[in-house]
Image 1 (cartoon, rainbow, N blue to C red):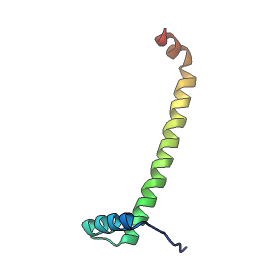
Image 2 (image 1 turned 135 degrees about the vertical axis):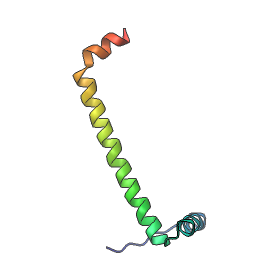
Image 3 (image 1 turned 90 degrees about the vertical axis):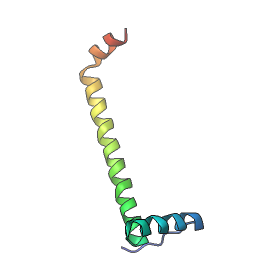
Image 4 (image 1 turned 180 degrees about the vertical axis):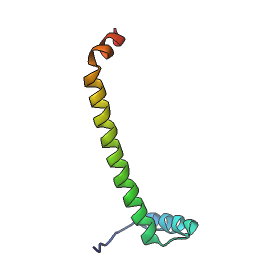
Length: 67
């Protein structure tokens, strides 16, 4: 799927510099950034769900520790 990504001049310059440093195209750098963004959000959601599960499972112990 194709899309247009509009960047400010500063954003484009930063992306170009990072891509050059990595030896990749700006397109590949942007695609990597999108994949990392999505993976990070997925990870945060999994951690939040796990934390909720632990807090529910150990609510009594956590309450007593807080006293």
